[in-house]
Each structure stands twice: as C-alpha cells, then as structure tokens.
Image (cartoon, rainbow, N blue to C red):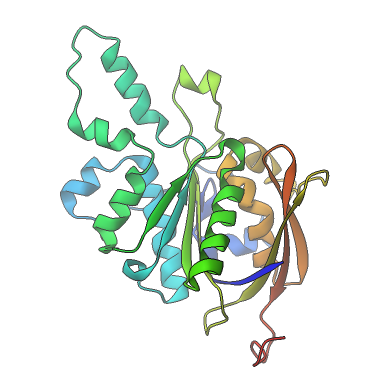
Length: 274
C-alpha cells in the first residue's frame, strides 16, 4: 500500500457549500438539503478572465482555493491534477449550435474554453502556478483515476500535490446521451509526509475488482451514482467522520482502489513513523 496524508479539502456541490459547512451534513449531524450548487467567484482571477471563465474553471478554482487555504499551501507552488468525466459540456454545446447554424463565426474564447485543460489554464492565471499540471478524463472513474495519478506523482517526486475533480451537467440534447446529475467539485491537497495541517493518513492499494464500491449516506447516494466527481463522497464522509475506516472506490471495469483512512492521533503523528 502507498501511504500519504490529507492536508486540506475543498468541496462545492448541491447543498454542500464548502468543506467546513459540509462536515455536519456528511456525518449526519445535519439533514442534507439538495439545493442548487453555489459556485463562488474566484477573486484571484483578473476581471476579464472572470467574465470569460467557464463554469468548470470557476468550480475547479473554488474548491482548489479552499483546499489550499485549509492546507496552508501556496497554490503557485503545487503541482496539480485536474480530472473530469467530460469537461465543459455547455461550451461544447454552444460550439455545436454555432457550427450547425448559417453564421459559423466561432468565438476564440469559446474555442479555448472547450479544451479539456482549460481549468488548468485558469488555475495558472489565477495563482501564478508554474508547477506541472495534468488534466485527465476516465469517464465515470475520473476521480479514482485522478487520485491514482496524484499518488503516483507524490511517490515519484516526493512533493505535495493538489487533486481537483469537477463535473457539470450537459445541456440538452447532449444530456440525453451523457447525463451528469449535478454541478459538483472536490479538491484535496495531498502530501507524502505528515505536516502540521495533516488531519488524516491514507493507505492506497490498486487491486483486482470484485468488491462492491462503498456507498454514500442514503440521502447522498443518488448524487454519488449520477455525478462522477461525487464518487469521492465515501472518502469525504470517512474524512469528515474522523474515525479509522476503509473505503472502496471502483476503477475501470476490473479494478478497485482500496483506501484505509486513519485520523490524526490527539498527540500528533508519531516520529519516526512506523
């Protein structure tokens, strides 16, 4: 198993307005109310870029900003993994409508927003980041693919990494072919060694499939099943609960990710680590 640590979390989804506000919901202390997702504006982006940014970029920046703040990390110094099951369907739909019309002049802004790594570009503008970024897509398993990539990079570089997963629903008629349930984003700041902000230790193993993936709380299970980025909910629930537990995430058709979660001991992480 590969060991790593969670330093910060960012969360934005329907009725989930930030990590701290969502912890009581994830732990069942407060009833879940699935209100429309409120994506806050990113003050780091210059005004022109804020106007041009697609919803995927705004969502990615909202959750990554929260996670980096919780970790006490400067986002400009963090390598970042961006993962989404389908990117910005709204922009793709707009482009297809333009191309199907008699007026086929395509906006350069629409074009550059359509590429899968557009949120990574807005991240670099907003934060001044010069570290490497990676943009992934693995259909319904995009969160698990992003987590596996982030852990692999940590293991090979010894550096902390930001993992940013996000999805937005496609408009009609694309929604009929690829239904995504809700606007949902999550970010994790992961580190290969414990630090002052580290509040949980995780051990990850990629194993042959066969095990049933972990479910979310009954009120959140529909969100987990219909929104690929929300496949993170069992992990987020375990982190919010603050108890030692295990989580299984499905990955592709024949594998699973096994995660063992250990909360930080009251006295802190032991030195040296066992």
